[in-house]
Image (cartoon, rainbow, N blue to C red; front, top):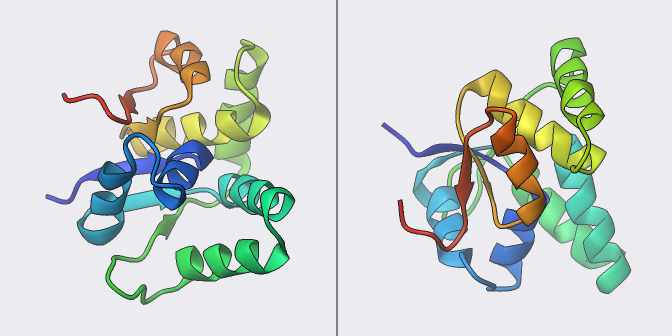
Length: 139
C-alpha cells in the first residue's frame, strides 16, 4: 500500500529547500500517495513569491497540480468542501495553528491519515487527535 499522507506547506518548502526531512517528502512525491488542499498549495505559492518571484511560485504550482508529474506520482487534492471547511474551523477555534495549517490538519482528519510536517505548531493538532508524522524523525 502506498504511503498516504497530507502534505502541509512546511513539508513542500522543506523539500524545495532541501531542509531537514526533504528526502522523506521526495520519497512521498515519487512513490507515495501525497494529498494536499489548494489552501496549503496557496500558502506555498505566496511564500515562494515573497521570497523569490511569481515565476518560481508558478513553476511549483504547475508541477504539483500536474496530472502527470515527471519522476513522481500525481498529488491528490481533497476538495475544500463544507465538511473540510467546518473541520478546519473547529481545529482553528482551539488556537495554536494558522488557518491554512488547520486545513492540512483537517484534511488529515477527514482522510484518516497523517499530516507530514516539521512545523512545531502541529503539536496542537496532535492534542486534538490528528496523527502527525514529523519530518526527520524515524517512526
